[in-house]
Image (cartoon, rainbow, N blue to C red; front, side, top):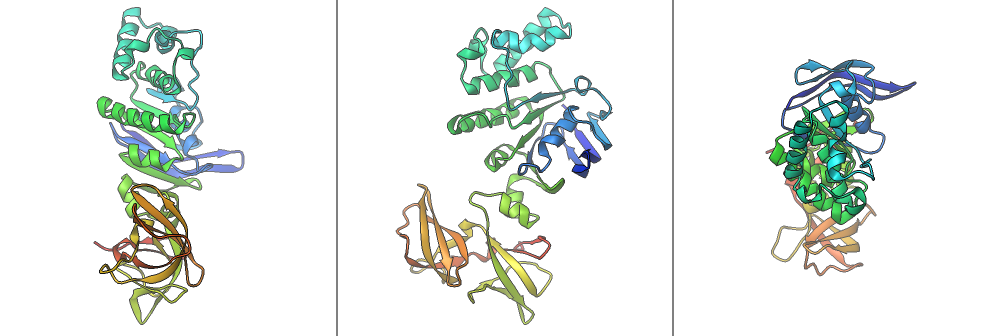
Length: 360
């Protein structure tokens, strides 16, 4: 397997720039997920690596070889698309072997590669079936097998699970993670689904508005988001954001619009207007004998999710947030409740969206 290096790459469609001076290194045997909303450039970036879109400027290196001018078939990568695009009249075996026959590979080598791919994907018993006899997840595994038989330097996945139903997506996501662990292959995976990103990635590349917002492990991106965009995009439900003021006389406290004072353990530039960010699990219903209450709120919608309860609340000034309670929470809509904010879970965001986190 091989490193993939992008240096100062840009791409425009007419007058619209979709990738702007982007640089990135994907290490050998790493699974990197490109995560971002629609229009962020993630699929275009993947297609530039594959050779399906041209690179206007900058360089692409795969396994030490410059590739931006090479045809797709010369780059040593294999792509798995959202749509399976299997030949309905061919068996699984023939679908996987078709591309190898086209390049004149020997029958014995083709048979070895197909058998190896079927073993890796645990689908030996499916080789003589046709696509109509397969489930959606099995068809996607055939598409992955068609990529594996090419023995590429890297695999590129373009939202491969988006056509599957929810339960099948979960199962196939686990299979993909296991596949990466078995193959130790270099993989780039594109998705707008943060759950896929968090569960699959060695590192996540968060893309927004033609550029990289943050690169980090899943928990780095979740716990220490580089910007307000990342904080709001990653996490389900998203991070709570509240207007906050830090006074020059005491910069260890953030004052919310309803007068609540939240202790700060955050390294920040100084006094001024900020947004305070805190995830729902950082806000708890204050119980008897527990931490002192930070503020008072009125419960609205109460979501009971089994292992936890999410409580949609309104503060005294009408500001809305989501707090978390135990799965056995007794809070009901309309209840007045005391909330406690965990200072170690508080973030501040300045007017430009730059993030400041709790130290330690």
